Image (cartoon, rainbow, N blue to C red; front, top):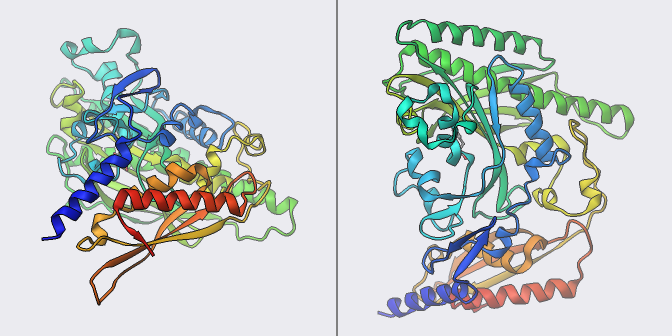
Length: 482
Ligand code: DAH
């Protein structure tokens, strides 16, 4: 009986927490959007990251990596047109529906995605721009669908690369931040109805060229496994077995070329460090183990992920696959006219590894001691200019009777903490949940790690922040602090 009123209090206090500060409209990138009490969950803190465009800065680790990959892929016989200026607000349709995400896909949840209102959100991945880019490859479009893209935006290239900032509500730690960067890539071949061998021959030639390039790379990739079975990872009916085979070989070799380039650059920078610093000890790999594993994405089939063996662990680098026919049809391609592959990779995690950056927040630092360390085209090892130790504080509370841990979402708690501590928040982790057997009340504890990347923060500053965090949690969830 008591459950209902308590739940209502929880929901009411939740709404109050967000709506007390919620303006009627918000401006993003020069455009005004109406907010919506039930959907808007984007915060000023996250909106402040929009427009930083770290990927466009050629002297920033993310920008350096972006350029390196673009150059490598454009050294192949396929031509990729680059699109690096798409704005981060996209429709729910573009981000999810157009790619075939089912209505109940967890990625759509308000706990995982920043919504502006019911219709618009901050893109969660660069795949949101695949259709507009497929539409820009003019030789593939059917004539009657040509009209919605202005002629000057059409391109003769056969592939595209999109780099951009993407946003996800998530827990925060050294590897996770509300914003990060992705690169999307795709490549297409047109079937010639008068010559069914034409695109097959072209694909064979392109693959041969990629294999020759790979053979010349300094760092050799050893594939320890390659999932080629189509049983559990079915192909599309619109393609023949031969087409799937060639298209996936082309996709895999293209990505391996990028991986070989990136890790070779890393190895070169390790060698340099070893030469200049006798204290630097580490084993320098002479080959790179990689494996292709089966994956699932709603708009590609079959799909894979590539992982590489790096510092004693498998590191997941990139998701990819053969583009499903419905996506090409939605892009205005005539039925049976073309085949294509696509991939998407996260830039930040790779850039952290390349430049030895241990905390993702550093990418966003305005400190010149960070920004001035990097130069276009060069992989260098980050020199920490200061290490401020940081401090942890726990917030522990009893949930109102009848509620369980399921009623408290970790990403929501993280948002509350970041809303108060901003970039001084290094991580927020759930550390304890237990039920008092006497009265069945549930206790929950989170550990917050406060640390500045650029300066010392005092104890009293941290205490003030922690006090505000506690108050905000009490207000939002109607809980009792322990
Ligand atoms: N958008 C996916 C993600 O964020 C990555 C991805 C996977 C992109 C497969 C693709 C693809 O284009 O084919 O996890």
